[in-house]
Image 1: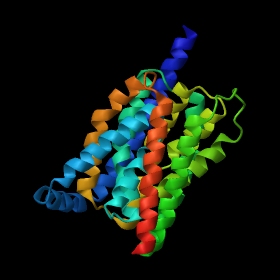
Image 2: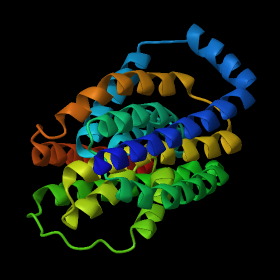
Image 3: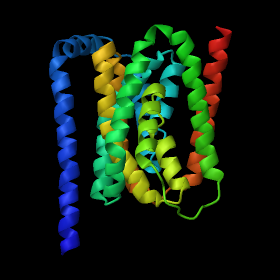
Length: 295
C-alpha cells in the first residue's frame, strides 16, 4: 500500500513537471504569437508534396526513438540536412517537434511504468543546462553553416558508429554508473549542437553499464521532453521561428508513432533495428561530409 502511494506521488510529480514545461512553452508561444501566425499563414499557402515526406520522416524517427530510447534527433537531423537545411535550423526544428513527440512518448512510458524515477531526476536538470548551453552556442555561430555542416555530420557519423557498436556488443553485467549528472550535461549539450544525441549518448552509456533497457529507455524518453523544451526556447530566443512546415510534419508523424513505439519496446528485435539505424545514419553522414567538401 505504501509503495503504491509512493508510486502515485512520483507520477504526480512528473506530471506536474510536464505541465510546468508545457506552461513555459505556451508562454514562449504567446510571446512569439505574431511571428507564429505570420509563418503559419505562409506555410498554409505553400504546403507542397515534401510536407508528407517530413510527416513520414517524423513517424519513422519517433518509431525508432520510442522503441530504442535513442536516434530520433540524429535520424531526423541527418534527413533534414540532406535536404539542405542549415544545422541550427535543423536542430531547432527537430527539438521543437520533439517537445510534442517526446512528451507523448514519455507519458506513454510513464503510463506503462517504464520510468525509473530516481534515474529520471538525475538526468533532468543537468540535461537541461547542457541543452541550453549547446543551443546558444550553435545559434551564435549560424553564419558559419558551411563549416558547421561537415562538423555536425562528422558528429552524427560517430553517433551512428556508437549505435552499431552498442548493437553488436555482448551483454555486460550491471555496474554502478558514476556521475550520471555529468553524462546528462554532456548529452544535452551535444544533443543541441548536433540536433540529436541525447539517446545515443545517455541511453547507450547507461545500457552498456548493464542498466535495465526498459527503464533506461522510458526514463531517457521522459527526460527528453524537458531537454527539447529548453533547447527549443533557447533557439526561439536567438534565431526566431522558422521552417514551420518541417516542424508540423515531424510533429504529426511523431505523435502517431509515439504510443505505438512505447507498446513495442519489449517486442522488437532491438539489435537488428539498431544496426539498420546505425548504418543508415553512417551512410547519410558520409554523404553530407563528401558533399560539403566537394561543393
